[in-house]
Image (cartoon, rainbow, N blue to C red; front, side, top):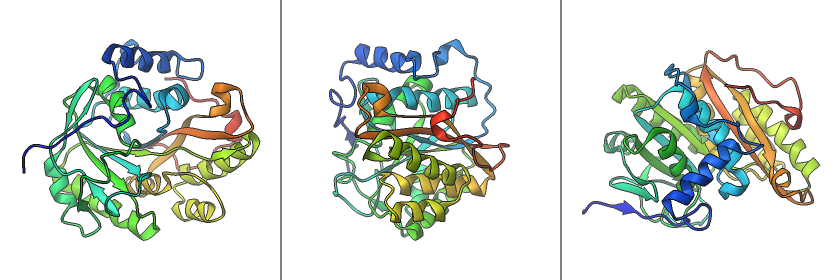
Length: 303
């Protein structure tokens, strides 16, 4: 097969299609009142490589970008990985249950990122994964992460995009086993990004309550509790990708902490029907524990 290049599907919609405008908006997300208030280039990376995984939102940048910037600043400070496995939910219904884009490049207005074929080949040894392009062609949940990745790490970090349409817990467990196999086999620094928004289209107070309970489960690495919340009505679109991140983090005893949470209501002022956005990192050396305050009162730590 000839080299595959995945062209942007939501440039000009979720984020600007023009390179200069995109960079300006990304920097505005970092400087936004709900963002971390500083640019990565203003900070010296620690290069401690303690972060195993992160949860990041995937709405339009004007809504969730400042929240995502918190996670990406943490990732920048932690140090550049060799490869990023990006897990996203399947919003389109296209493609196979667990679809891996197997080769080539993904393109954004900031350039191209190469697929890590070595990692892909190891994943495809596991039955749960399938080589599939169709699930990715119109899907936004992975694409919207790439300009942030390119902004903080440049274009020489490799990626493995995985779109998950089968949200069952047993599937998440099999995906995590494949990822752990790839980490052990390649000896590479592999970062897991799980793309997800939180509660969808509930009043602000209801969304905050539901998301607080969900984030308690997430940072506690309690995957079964997260699935129970989904079964009882939590409308978190990427709970399966986040569950995979939690399972991998648990293997490395990497505790989670919420670095930012807010809702679309905090952006536009309409709190009658909101979407929740959270950035969470899973870091070695961080105790696995629950937050001591409700999420809506959570103050993200400074870097």
